[in-house]
Image (cartoon, rainbow, N blue to C red; front, side, top):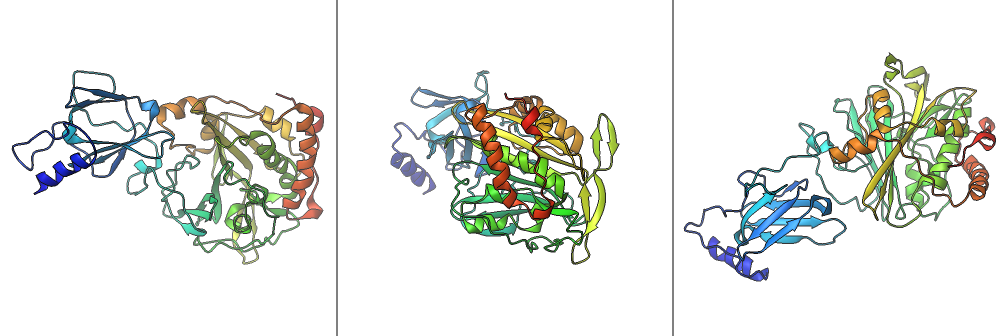
Length: 437
């Protein structure tokens, strides 16, 4: 009976000469790989599919998104930017050759994302999955395959939390350290889908019940430390739900008022005015964080925190010594990536100008050396190695004059994004020394 069902499948899929008769219902088709898991998604290699009608179908890895294997049935090939798969039955093939032609062998595909999150032992992270479709605030690793994610910390004290809202998808994701009561990183994307400006900021700081140990909604030293957003409220104005999710205290780091309202605020404005996509096809992947572990600068390890403060519930909170941003830009037209990172010391006064921070931008490799965190680990390893070794800057604002005007407008608009108006000292030093690229 199974044999006749298999023949019917071949017939209904519209293939000719699809079914090579077998002497036993349990015999494996000749082209079927000998070792793989049902419903397995593999990273694509060059593929050469030999059909039993004499035709050869070639697929280059650069054009493939993923390949799904179905035990005893066939495979589904997903091309980049395609909405449907191309399907082949094993019974219509004589062999599959992976990579460069080498005489018809069928090796098990190798994983070219060795350091990806889904390869962490003991985890069950899919390589591909739809974004959440409803408003959510949950602790989960099911979206750790996304490109903006760094390599997750496997300590039992750490957890990942995803904030999402319909119909805009993920607002941001974060990693939280319950032992240190501190954010390890917040990540998000900027694209045409989630960057709509439909609402105004509505301030509502709140504890986060998605983590085991959340700070309360205020700091005891509120005149010294601002509740500094990592994913800014000004980047999430598509809906009130989306904007409200940026006010969870797990998306904050204690920041000196001058740093929060000065250089950090200005750099956040530049993400919107200079570095985010200006078309509907590209995507900017953003990591925002501060140091809560030791850092390594010029080969020397030192503390990544300055001191501690407390929240209104008496929890001890770390005050980071450095803040940083990492950016990965995907250009759809050329199917290419570029990246750079920014690093700023967290000072109570005398903070550098935004221009100085940008002029001293670093590669992702250097950021990884300083923090010990593997960023953008879900990129294929060969692409990751190339992109992270190179510090590539871009600026998509239209002209130097317009950029200057936008800078003043952003500085004024962004004042509303700051918690303590009395602490605002707008950083305008960059007006005098900014180098236009």
